[in-house]
Length: 512
Image (cartoon, rainbow, N blue to C red; front, side, top):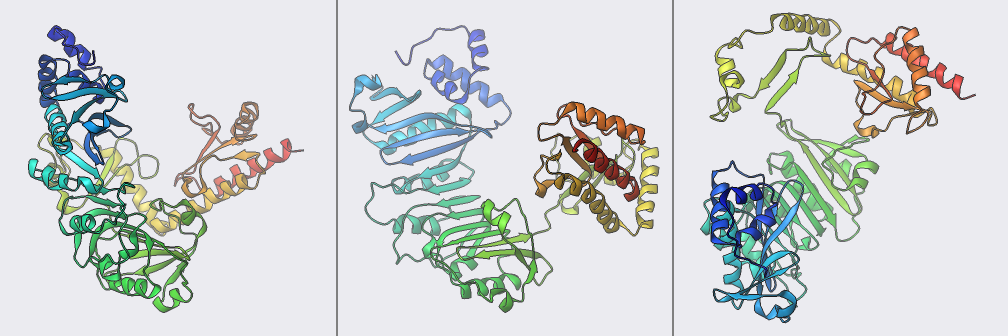
């Protein structure tokens, strides 16, 4: 029997609950009223969960999913009764006027009225976990749920996703128009349904964080692009012309679309960008790499161009026959927090730079000693400061200034690390660095000797020879092994050359 009536002691139930995954919690809640009350009471007392509830409404069924940072768990479904043709297979039972069963290891409720069933499962799970619905994934049949969810909870939906369903033989112009004209989410919109060539939208959308138009972005015009107020915009099958992009960049350069941080267009047809950079007076910026690029091929193979807004904010542009990418380099730092050890001073000193508008916005539970507001109000003397560490850092800062400043130190560090990486990359595999070249540290150069897996005998011999040349602490971290050369600010170029010379000598001695 899929929903047994359990008469279990309270203490035993509490222990069981602590071991359950989200979908198991929902299943157990059907066991008895006592179990459901216990589960509900427990989650109402707890700190907010690291879960998000999603409602999925698609065709003849609806479902509630719980999404964690690493997993997605379907927890409860509602299905139209016409789908349950084989009752013996689903082992459904009749209870309270509707049927219950199991499918794919989760509880399923069967309804004549699918909308009523959708509402019931959402009400059930949100009440059980004391959480609002975070996102809605729907086909055209689920448009009704946008207004219903936003009316039933204080906080608006964070995200909407409109997906394509092959059962519909017509275009989805009306549902898409409804979503675009009625603000239904605070953070993101993902639009995947097919629309006709005649579809047009003449309004504004946003502000929000992300807009993704997949597969059917042919309707997006220059005016739409200017009126989309998002930080990230992605459009596939775009029909925007080079002239449109020229106009949009002039619009951006003069201060339009100020919140935009990332724009990616994938064109429906090949696009000719010849002389595009000349018309806009773009500055070539070769070998641009940015981890915000979702298409790895774009990031790895194309050069970029730099463009600057009137207020000084810079952006990088990539373009090719089938794509256009704009990356805006907004000043994004609100808090800079770092330990002084290694490059700025002695361990024990922490330096924090805080943007003024963030001061005083800490949580109520923040201890005074960790409050930036209290620290600033007391001139950083709320508690006894590490005087020795502050004095040392002051000396280091004066030293950096005497060396022509931070940029000069940075350039010197590039030379030092480049010297070692150059030997590694030209050693025909004798030295091996596993870190992608785009993300290599200029402070700590880690490598193995004798191939990718490393030869511990060779590495031990290398370390012994290094010690004889007054180079110590080159042994890699115990968790990864190998060699780690720390080239902090205190290490000179001449000292780095000593290491480089030893690496060349060692390779020559073992490559004969």
